Structure formats: C-alpha cells, structure tokens
Length: 134
Image (cartoon, rainbow, N blue to C red; front, side, top):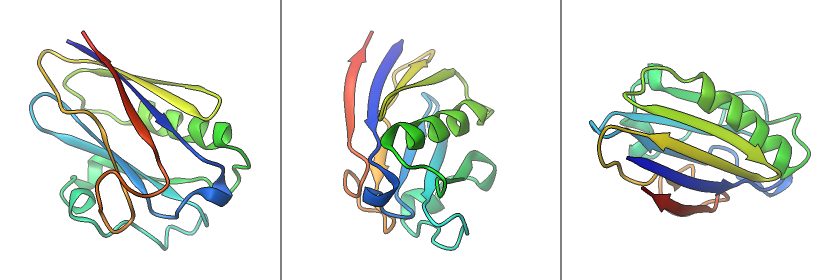
C-alpha cells in the first residue's frame, strides 16, 4: 500500500506557533511534528492528538530561522525523515512550500492530519491534501 500526501507550509510569518501534523502507521501508532515559530519551545501544542503521541515519537521543530514556505518545508522534511520506529517507510521531499510525504505500508492507513495548536483537526496554518493511495 502506498499513500502520497501533500502538506503546504506558509512562510514563518503566516504560520501559527504550535500547529502540528500527525502521521499514523497501519498498526495505529502515531508520530507528530509541531512548528516552533519562536525557537524557544515555549508554545507546545495542547490538543488531545498531540498529547496522545508518545514523547519519543514527536518533534517540536524550530522554524525561527525560516523566511519562506520552502524553508519551513525543508525543516519539516528533515524532522520527518529523522523520526524512527515506523512500521513502514515515510519519505518526505520538499518542492517549494509543498512537502510531499510518500508512505509505504503493509496495510491501509489513515491520511496524515493537521491540527491547530489547540488541537482542532483540519484547522490552523497548515493546509493538507490527500493525493493518492495505491
């Protein structure tokens, strides 16, 4: 099973500190990446989806030096590709402000979800589009 998702990141100025992305594998395990706009890790997400992810499976990514959506996408790409423990393979590649996440799993998975800092699914400053599942 292969799934391709596109997550588009705005410039740092248009990004809300603490917004995050959650990726699930086919066994239900979750990984999360949150955006740290100030570089101080002082605005960690508070939503239930963030809190449900094991500490070892999440990263709070410093985007304070980013100036463009492409900069933000490149930092998130590095963070996603550094996460370990997936039961499949996720490869993230940035193309401008778009981050294309390709996941290869042994079974069906749910689409990665984006959240506002407070945890409202599908809201905040990170648009996401499900592209394909093969």
